[in-house]
Image (cartoon, rainbow, N blue to C red; front, side, top):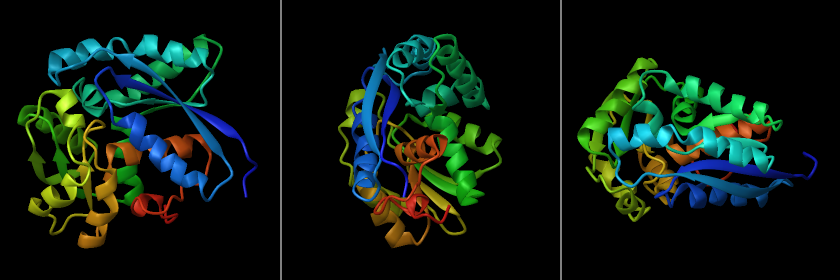
Length: 252
């Protein structure tokens, strides 16, 4: 068993985000029930109210400031908690963002690994060996298509998608976390390798992950699940957390 230690989890979040600061702690608190490590949570915010390409680009430019602020707190890992902001900047941009933001922490004398939710989603799908997937997203259809294009550029085929077409980010965060369990019943999943229950860090879905997985027999992840998993990997910690799907089963 690992030696007990407290880790500082840093998150860069959109100013209107209300979900990542609840879902990531929920998973890690569940982990605390079976492992000795403890976690504290620290955030810095970028202004964003409407999920539009222009607002996302403006918001992303503010992420460097947030990385500096969080490195002042000497966080152990830093998560960029806005998937579509990264994906809307062009194919493969998560690698550019992660390298740049890590560089800011190094310059500040507090080097910390950086996980973007966009990169985490892609990496988690690769961990699962998923080549064909179906996704649920709250975005307007053009933004969902950006996400699809981004994922497919990484060599993963999106077989089907559902867009809820909610542009107000605060409204996205008010959705029922059990809603994806019902909505994903409309997704085409035949021949797919995995389901993304929420391709958005703001749309709550944690309570639906295991329900969907139990119903379909397919691995189910979300942006927050993938981000938490990759944070634990960057910290070199066990990724076993019961109740949140195959990714946390210890099989990967």
